[in-house]
Every structure is written in structure tokens, then in C-alpha cells.
Image 1 (cartoon, rainbow, N blue to C red):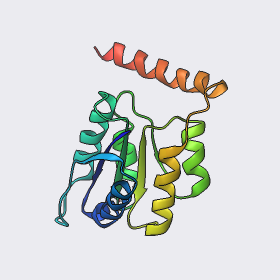
Image 2: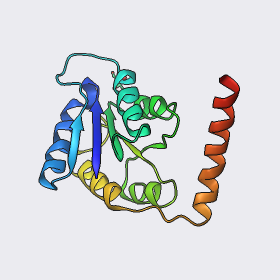
Image 3: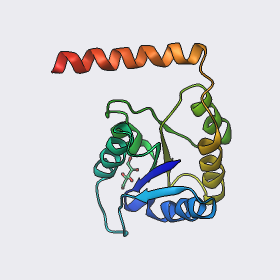
Image 4: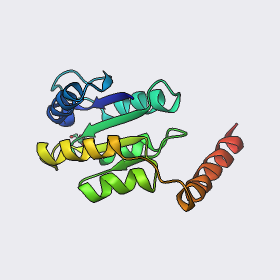
Length: 152
Ligand code: RB5
């Protein structure tokens, strides 16, 4: 599995922890920045990482800002992306099993390092369960396609 990861300054410290975990688990990743603590715009990194996932360059993406909220809002604007802000273990599993999320958003100023690591591990290893959930996601994709076609 190939993972794209990005953060703003507020998610930078937690991103380093998540990267350590990816390296420990020998998961292939690319860090799209930011690369220091200087103030920057989460939206730039959300779009960069999300477009790379949507294009199929990476299987999944992880985005970290202060709350995870800005990253999640911006990421979900990219066609083909299903991003979720996750703050607990149950949601980490369900957002894969039921929502087939391809982007995980975390709040570096909200959750602790250990819970973040557990969330990432569970989110990466949990598969989508298809069935009725596939039909539900299909309705979101159909709406997304409709809107995009109207804009073209
Ligand atoms: C940065 O101050 C902060 O607004 C950002 O990291 C994020 O929390 C936005 O949703």
C-alpha cells in the first residue's frame, strides 16, 4: 500500500509521529509537506494529497492539521475522495468498513499521539465491507458525477 501524507504547521508534530509509525510498519509513503513549523495554509496540502490519491498515485492519504476539520472539508471537495475526521478507535474501523474512506484526517491539537497511532493502524488495515454500504456510497458518487457534469 502507498500512502500520501501531509499536514500544516499545526499538524506537523503529529505527522512526524505518524511517519515514524509508517516507517516502523514498512509502509510505503510520501510526505507532501509542510516540512517545518512555519505557519501555512492547510488547504494547499489537503488538495495536493487528495488529488494524488484521487488520481491513483497513492492508495490512501493521511492529512493532519490543528483540528483535522479544515483538512477534511478541503479534501472532500476533490472528486473521488471520501475523507473522514477520526478521533476514536470505533470510527477508525467504521469509516473503512462502511464508508470506504480513502483519506484519514487527524487533529494534531486535539488527540494524543498514542490514540493517533492506533487510529492510523486500524484505519490502514481495515477493509471495506461492500454490500449495502457500496450502494450508499454509489449514491454519493452518482451525485458527485452529476454535479461535475453540470459544471463542465
Ligand atoms: C491553524 O491555525 C488551524 O486553523 C488549522 O490547523 C486547522 O485546525 C484548520 O482546520
